[in-house]
Length: 310
Image 1 (cartoon, rainbow, N blue to C red):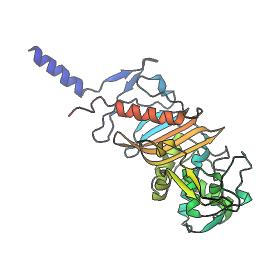
Image 2: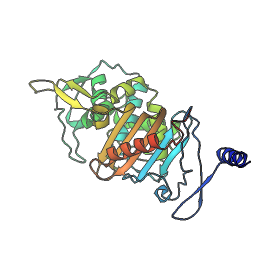
Image 3: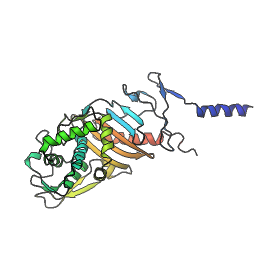
Image 4: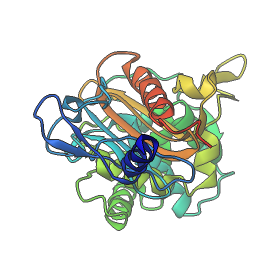
């Protein structure tokens, strides 16, 4: 009889959806079950209006704005200040790439780097010397992979109609994607008026992932290009160290940094069998965005208490 009672109690315990309680405010936090096959995750139902780090079992990230979404289901696994506009720095270059590719311009066309491509706003250094001629495809490669600002500027400058037309195309693309809180004022991200939200950037990453060229380029570890006046080709590295030397499964990646934006990172990556879009914004430590990404991975991989059950 005791055994039967225990069996009934245990069965009810599996069927009922329990409520977890925040240690900070004692408010109920619902259990969310992932729709992804074989994945049951004990995650907080995110309240966007307060810091989710207040709740039990939730991530504590160095990035001041963050969002993690299942790419297939749209399920939000984590959110932090997701609707606050903030400068996005070189994450901008994902939109630059989409606009270039949408125009179906000849990718083998040679483009010359000129004085117009020099950064007079922030005074950043570039290894891409004035007079260098590269194809549009090569400029796209190093603009995305190595965040080369002169390459991104040249892509916008040589768009039909010049930079004004290019910026209009960027804004139109953002509107089409439903990025209601996003603004673009240059092709590089050096202008701090280029702002967006974590919610909007999930939409942009999702759209960029549909371009095979962007997926391929942003997940390439390094690439050499001939530079005017250099004795040998210049080797450019991917700005995301997780792409260069780690066991991550990354389908798309873009970093960004200016002082106003802090350290930024957006990725499409597979973790614990789930295709995820990860947006990390305004992280001030030099390596904190990478630390946040690794914390996210560990949190997701260890958050399934039934992973080893048959």
